[in-house]
Image 1 (tube, rainbow, N blue to C red):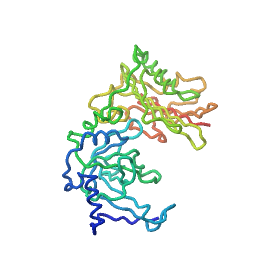
Image 2: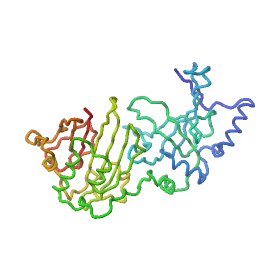
Image 3: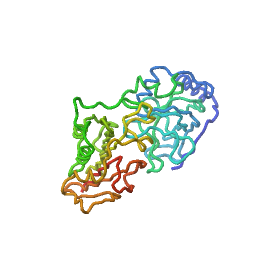
Image 4: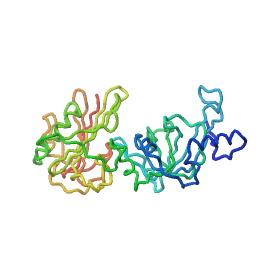
Length: 378
């Protein structure tokens, strides 16, 4: 079904004039000249900052997408028309764990990120009339769901709420800090450490390798088990569901700190896949330009008070892993088949760029930055 967009058509007749007055009352700031908006009210700023995704944007296009024919279940094409907008992302706050928020530019592109969305009211109901005066105006965009990755499969257009206006702060992070303490700061508070003198904080390199090896076994470690093993609380990247969960943690050790990641999702068979990751990193610096749960370039050049080698981890694993048949070199995902899971492990060498799970870094027995453990249901 092809949609024919109507973009910034001039008003004609009393009906269109009435609509313009109605829009002016609903969006008073939108009637300002392009780019000359005032400040957002405290209540508007609080509402936007508390949305799952929030970004500072500039509106470049407002359109009405009207299908040539009636869409499914509708009597006419006009009943399924869609008010859309295109915006340039100027600034965006990250989300905890799951995604980094709206990027400033798309993948492998030097240009800005242009996001297309369906315009909605604060209760995320679709707008019926296009607010054309918003074109050229800067404001804040709130979204419950981020747009789909352009590399991935096509998904329905996401709904977004645009409120024109400025924040009065030097950046979006500062503006939202009083209202968005739960996740979205560029420098959010570090996760709580378990009270007391946890043994992981003062262990030798070989003892730490033993602790890492404990992530490998017939069943994936639960979040509570990971907390107990490394002495740090885990935070959920989003509310866990029956189909997916995403937990992150940061264990503050005396030497190298450990960043933890545990993701679970349901396969087509109804069984759960689980991926665990433990990464050694420097103590968290205040000037780090990404949240503590995300990789940063500095993670690849940090010093290593403790050198953990793949062979040290393998030595501490169960007897079911035949060491004579496994490396070095440790350049592939090592596999053992347990009754319930096929378990694969992957070592990321120190100084290597972050890798995707399907990539296989080449390492002999060099110091590692990360250990991945993949649990595939059988």
